Length: 103
Image 1 (tube, rainbow, N blue to C red):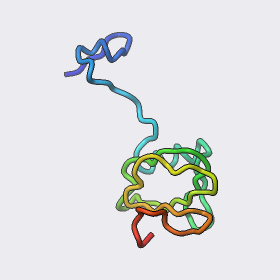
Image 2 (image 1 turned 90 degrees about the vertical axis):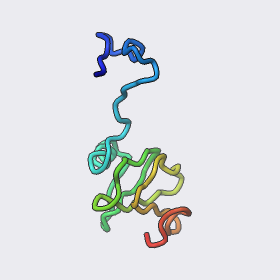
Image 3 (image 1 turned 45 degrees about the vertical axis):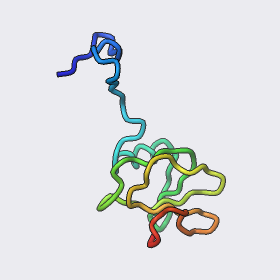
Image 4 (image 1 turned 60 degrees about the vertical axis):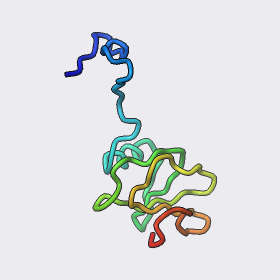
C-alpha cells in the first residue's frame, strides 16, 4: 500500500523513486475533449481534428477510438504517439512520414 504524507510530497512516500502525477492530457476520447476545450483542436466538416498548437496525443487513440488529425501550417508536430490514428499535414494533405500508409 502506498500512502502519501499530508503534504502530498513525493519525498514523503518513503520511496523517492515513486512519483504520482496527474495526466497532462487525459487518455482516449477524454483527452480529445480536453484539447478541444483548450482550443488546441477543432473539427472540420469531414470530422478530422485540426491541430492549432503544440500538444501531446492522448494515450489510447487506437482501435475504435482512432481519429484523423491535420497538422496546420506552422504548428509543431505533436508529442507522443498517435496510436492507430492518422496525422496529415495541411499543406499537402498527405500522411506525415512514419505514419500508416492507409491514412
